[in-house]
Length: 238
Image 1 (cartoon, one colour):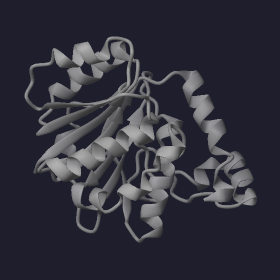
Image 2 (cartoon, one colour):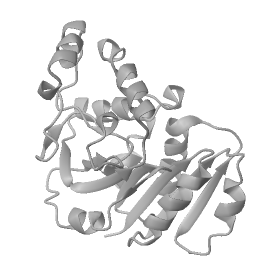
Image 3 (cartoon, helix red, strand yellow):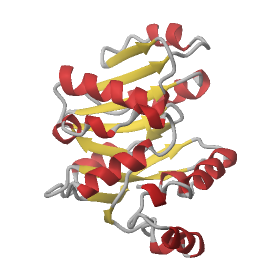
Image 4 (cartoon, helix red, strand yellow):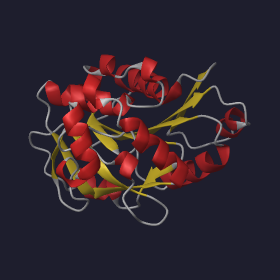
């Protein structure tokens, strides 16, 4: 199996260095890094990497996570021989045994997986948890606020879900190639992954939440609160 890492970065060189350091330890066939118009020295540092697996795509402006992941996805699907693509941000990376765990998963009937993303305290990141059932009405949204466990999987139990996070998603290259239009650049950094995953679900794809696939996400408390609060406004329009 050929695994490709897809990382999008913008002006977080310090965190990117750690992400690349940890990624290079893993047996990825290719590591695609999309530099989203960074102005903090990122390009110069990326140019110094000598590992031949690393492919840097440099954009002239910040197109957001959505634009970066779409650019990287298009490149992978058109230019690389890859079986599975691992998505994550410049402040995240897989655990050391994640690729081995993925190789041992039963993949029959599944072409997209959602991993368990943990914060620096070792707790599940709420902003990266998929939905087992997407709230699609105002009533559902209110109920989600009161009883979130009805809408998200138990952290340590595998189950089918309806959405993904672009931190911790693993998708088959063939499915990605036919789903590029579901990555909407207009969404920039919020809800792009939720929309993408939900469109796959509506099309009949089975998304498996697999807590064996562990990812680390160096996310701040502020970031989690923004993402969670932002979520509450989208479900009535999906």
